[in-house]
Length: 370
Image 1: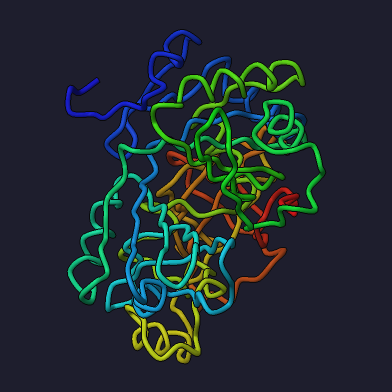
Image 2: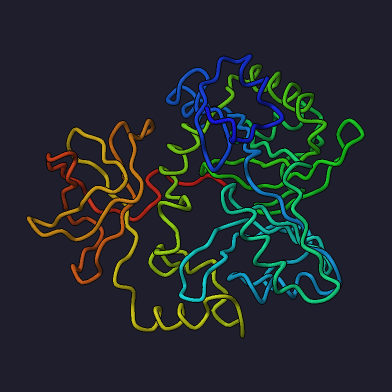
């Protein structure tokens, strides 16, 4: 591994568990422990425990901080209130996606943002450059760890580890968050995740990382779950049809093309990229995201050509073997001029061999987040 890669405060725990590592977004992160398929299955059937501390942490605070953020990012914070989180996009003026991120709305004067690892500094800098007097943008990357507890037993894990009271889910709806007290430390607990399963993400002080991980991991083991790495995170999110920035979203892929228009406040008077996105929505995008489900043997990967007959009609952006469906799946950008729709059959050029696939609307596996 490169000496320039950052490490999670939990790196020693991952080494002790026998994790294999890989560079991701400038970090050295665990890819798997017991195996991607086992970790994937454990998350779907019981619970998976993920260290996602590579994700960014940016605090925007000061008079009118929420209103300021709302003039920059695509989604409309007016749709939610304090104690709620929101998926949103940071776009360039041409409509390309600089990053996708989660915003935690604490009040009119404070917003906490969780961008992707590689883009965290860039998003923070963009906001800081145009912040009005009194609004301060602070990179808090090293102050926090982020853990994801995902799967049908996730609520039980948090209750038995003492993070949340044993009162059921009525107190925390999807995309809601609370600041809980655990071991005399504040832990932000949000009903979010990147797996399509019922789950939670915890933002905690870095100094509590190991004790919190140990407490969660002990209960995860008791209920038949596993620590899970970025390998399972990728197969789970692909089955759920969730985009990965740098593949399914990016500077050359707009929210309209990626079917992320739900994260755009179209009626807002201002946000970065507004005019370009409105024009593209009005005219119709030249390409649109679809799912591809292999009907034959083979696994599509990213950046493979998609053909209708002998005519190229697009390219895969993500691809993997689905442990749940036991077949290859992919997300792809397909030319709208081809007129493709759900149920049509295309082929993916897998290293010179055509792999027949059915065009489907994601998700491949129904979401259970609520």
